[in-house]
Length: 99
Image (cartoon, rainbow, N blue to C red; front, side, top):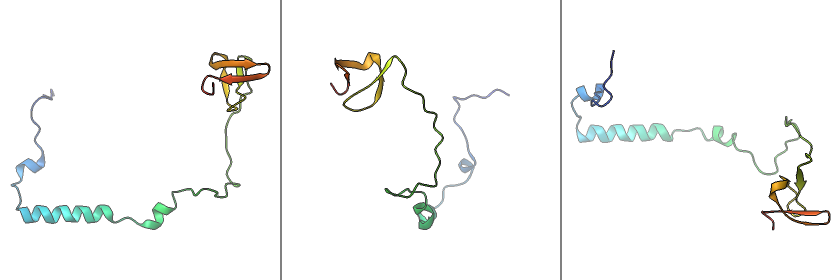
């Protein structure tokens, strides 16, 4: 069955006669009341507080050692590729962001 996507769409609401202004206001107020009705206890459990005890948590992160074409910035201590090297003074290497 072919569908004409440019044609105006009709919904079930189009077939129903428009309600009075008072009925529409009452429906809007009911919709607002239903949206606000949230249990505050459920929302508080989803937030992590700073300084929370995370000793029971286990992380699964694969650590890759520093490669030959990478360096550690002596200012911000982040590992970058050699193309981010701005300055080198002996063993001290500075990235483009810190330079």
